[in-house]
Each structure stands twice: as structure tokens, then as C-alpha cells.
Figure 1: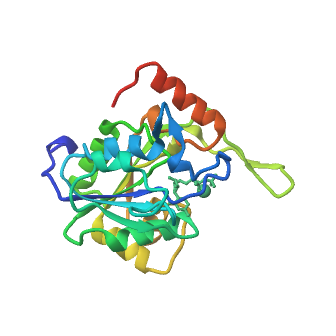
Figure 2: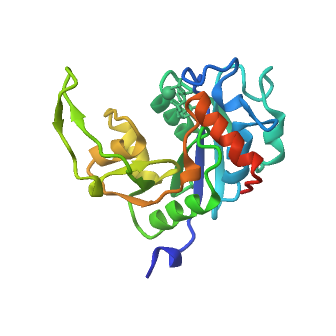
Figure 3: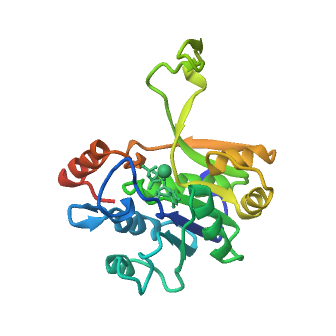
Length: 237
Ligand code: CTP
Ligand code: MG
């Protein structure tokens, strides 16, 4: 059986959009910055609702930007399925994921965690992640080969090693997991830099599936300009 033949599962998606966007330096939280007139969050949500097997969506938003609050982006309501849950984020990304997981429908057996800042991630990337978890992987994340040579360095900047590039991947989101595995990882008290690393620490194998250059993260003003050029060139999901 190939990944593509996997039985459909009940998929829940947590979109983390509660960061402040310090490196972008805009006047509003990053997810609410506009790209050709629409928020980054609305582009992300437009893609999320096309995920195969989608049963539940949780949006993790900054305080002041939730439904009924002054910052709420009414544009996203057009796209969202009934029953979408909203929750305020926490101080760190991991806290925001945890808050989102707590609100996710417990009936979902596959969970995707997605950065709103990766607002142009194509639906096909979501599909590959869902297919891999549906086929039995504990976790699956999109990744791209690394083009630069990567060096490890010490505190003085002296190179300590040159990892084999063939064994490196730059990973993106959505990161997808068996729901029980991810919930157990978040209950473990361990901490890690991303959800995949947390799951790895609890002893599970996480697979890398093919990523997409369009799943890049808007981090700096240059990234936003890149996204603007892509949208201006007529990119559509
Ligand atoms: N995020 C979140 N809650 C946080 C921090 C980050 O929900 N406390 C989300 C962001 O909204 C973003 C994703 O996690 O969609 C990836 O984080 P990053 O790109 O680092 O966004 P920011 O933390 O907002 O940006 P910066 O680090 O430049 O402040
Ligand atoms: Mg950050």
C-alpha cells in the first residue's frame, strides 16, 4: 500500500497565529499583516479548509484579535467551517500549540500543527503530510534539501564540523502527528524547538515528506516582499 492509498482519517488542524512578529517589525501581529489587501492568516486559512478529511479547526490568536475583540479579521469567517474554535496563544510558540491542542476535538485522530506565517503553503503539502500519518507514521513533516553547506560552530565562531548535506532537511509546516502521540508528547513535560522534535524525544519516528518552496515562512520584511511578488504573479492555491 502506498501513502496515497491510506484510509481517510479524521483530521484536526491547529493554526498558530499568536506570535508578535518581532523580526517583521509591523504595527500589527504578523498574522494580521496584509498581503495584496488580505491578512496572512486569511491565506493560510483558505488553504487549511481544503485539507482532505478535515473535521476540526482551531485558530490560536493573540489577545485582542479573537472573535468579538477589536482586532478580529472578519475576512477569515468566510472560509471557516462551522464549529471552528478560537483560543488565545501563549508566550512561546509551544504554549500556543498546547492551548490549541486543548481545544481540538478529541475525536480527531490526526493532528496538523501549521504556522499562519507559512501562509502560501499549497494544499498538496498538507495532503502529503496527512497521507503519511494516515499510512501509519507517528509523525510527518514537510522538508526540503539544504542547498548551502552547513557548519556547526563553537561559542567563538570556530567551525566544529560539517554535517553531510545529503542527510539534512530544512523542515516546514504543517507538521502532522497521530493525535495520541502528540498529546502524550505535550503531556510529557519535555520541551523542544518544534513539535517534531518533541515527538522525537518521546521515542517516536517522525518522517520527512517532500516540502514545497511555497511553504516558506514569512519572517522578515524581505520574506513579505517575496510573498507579495508571488501573489502579484498570479499564484493561486
Ligand atoms: N506563534 C504563536 N505563538 C507564539 C509565537 C509564535 O502562535 N507565542 C506562531 C506565529 O504566529 C507564527 C508561528 O508560530 O505563525 C511561527 O513563529 P514565528 O515565525 O517565530 O512568528 P513570531 O514569533 O510572531 O515572529 P518573531 O519570532 O519574529 O517575533
Ligand atoms: Mg517567534
